[in-house]
Image (cartoon, rainbow, N blue to C red):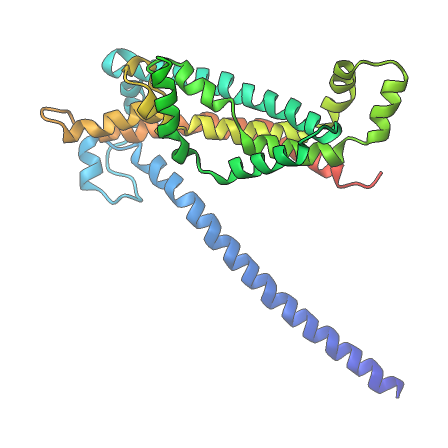
Length: 299
């Protein structure tokens, strides 16, 4: 009887091992497909940024041409039209630093307050925030334009910055994160010791919210860096274009009467545009991952 039981256990172990192998292969294959899907556009962009205008038309899109013009293309991007690309870069940095930074600050303070203070109408506020998260930003672009147009605030940076300060998803994320990340007993102890609410938030709440703040900052930074539709309808002066709208205006030159086709500069400019976002993720990911790992350890 013991021998039969032992054989049955070994048989079940072999079956589980084979199932585990099949699942492992399936998971690896699925992950590989997703990785290829994610990296293919980046590879295409990197490869074609090394080509001249003639090389783009004469070569295969996923392989290099006979001429290598990456550094020449970068120099032309930075100097074309009196270096307007650098002006667009500074505009984008302005929109991101003020817009994303302000949205993160507002989301952090608002999420902390909504999580740790009780007041009348809190459930209504929660419903409004959830509803705002469900509404796509493009659906609000035209009403926002009409509102700013009536206030004569269009065609200047405020028309892009002020709407960017409102981040419903960031507020909701910080609300949920603050609820579990900050123990109420710790706040009560600080209040008993005589600390003000502002000092309690600065010295106790904010350090514990680090991973959530970094997450919201990443989301808002990417959203503002890639913002296209709002500045497209708000800004008419090319001197205030962000990179998204400015590079697209280069792309549209070929379809205008007498316009110059500069697709090599469009591709190279797009490559330069994504480098800061990659750098931001590489810099901030260690704070994000370490904070999430620390939150997963039971104290």
